[in-house]
Amino acid sequence: MTTEELWKKYKEKQFIISAYELLLNTTYYDSDTIAPVKGRDYRNERMAYIGGEVFDMQTDPEYIALREELAAKEDLDETSREILKWELKDLESFRYIPKDVYVAYNELTMKANVVWKEAKNRNDYKLFEPYLLKIIEMRKDMLQYRHSDLQGYDIYLSDYEPGMTTEKYDQFFDLIREKLVPLIKKISAAPQIDTAFTNLHYPADQQRKLMYRILDYMKFDLEAGVLGETEHPFTSAMSKNDVRVTTHYYEDNILSSIFSVIHEAGHATYNYQIRDDLADTYVFDNISSGMHESQSRLMENYLGRNMAFWDNLYPEAVKLFPEQLKNVDQEAFVKAANASVCSLIRTEADELTYPLHILVRYEIEKGIFNGTVDVNNLEQIWNDKYEEYLGVRPQKASEGILQDVHWSGGSFGYFPTYALGSGYAAQFMAAMRKDIDVEVCMHNNEFQTIKDWLKEHIHQYGGLYLPQKQIEIATGEPFDPNYYVDYLTEKYSKLYGIKE
Image 1 (cartoon, rainbow, N blue to C red):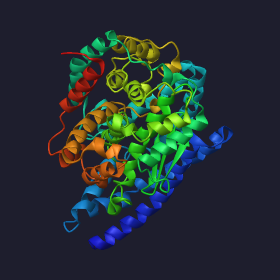
Image 2: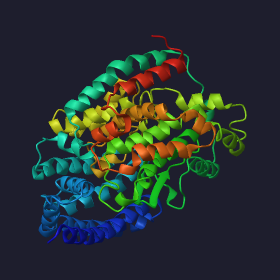
Image 3: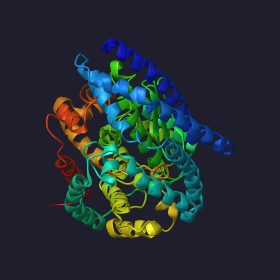
Image 4: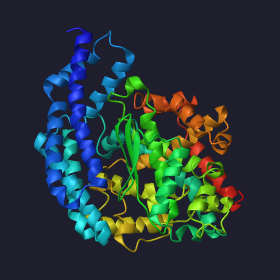
């Protein structure tokens, strides 16, 4: 066959697979947002079956051979070659897993997600523990089916962030320990910022109005996206023109929904700003986790916690919450949004202490896979590490080991990308500031200018390139974590009046 004929055949097969994946993704989204609880067993069984059908199509020897033949064609254009390279690489993560094992694992994680929600609501880790231990057992066993030059936990780390290993993450987190832990201790001893007003009663209905105003300010296209509600906020990209974000409303914590919405809008913007010729390809949503997190953390922290971001929004927040914010000016609100306090909940953590939350999870995951952590004692290990690194100890499972959904889905290797993505974002912001005045754009209600810069330098490419190459494209230099620690040191030293 000619290259053109092979490509046509490949696209036809890809279309069929994408139809099944759309069905699965839509059902996953519904299950976590609006679907009735009593229908979950029926849904889960059928979703596991459909997942098995997709597995069969993806691992069909003829389809694998088609892609490999295409990738070897000398007259195939460079972009198509890159797309196939990523598809074939990611195929290695499940290509050799027996179908019955794959389906059983998917069914287990869907059940585990349901039990995790119940266990979290009941503060009962023992309810979830058997499912977690089984997931860990299966994730370890599934390593035997991987044909990789890497070993153990490094395989899963590389799945989420190609090129990253425990050695590289250890260096990254060692820098964070060295530079940030002393600063955190100084800030803990300094006079604290008043945040009490953020925990007054903020009715959910009024919060929803503010969230839509924030999305409007961020130029979020509500004809190509939607805001839903769930237990643990997430973004689901169905297609370039169907990207769904979610949040959770706590009526005693106004900052939670605000920054989860800004965060998830960052994820969504990455997806819907991909260039059109890549929108219906494998690299649309197969973006490295670190790169994706760089955009959500950039929006949430580097922009959303900036004073200028609120120049247009804060007066409207006061109108929605006149009693709660009547004695709070914009400066006091933004200071509260940036306050640094050693706390228990990762998703509510400030920028400065956030990477320590990730460090706890990284060390536990690394220990699970190298055998240095007792998996039958995970809750106590979690609590001990929080006390060691952050000086606080969970008193209940919902604020400890059950706070995150990730392990119920077997996402080992994902957590470190949160901190790494924050590091990438610092370097992207430094590059952006060389080209545009970020504060002036936000003050003048010209958020589109910021989005245009991100699209030109990052978003348009989707997952076409390795993170290391994408960083060089956007900034002109390799990744340098010192941008991250220098940014945090400067910002928080100034905020709290800490001198070197």
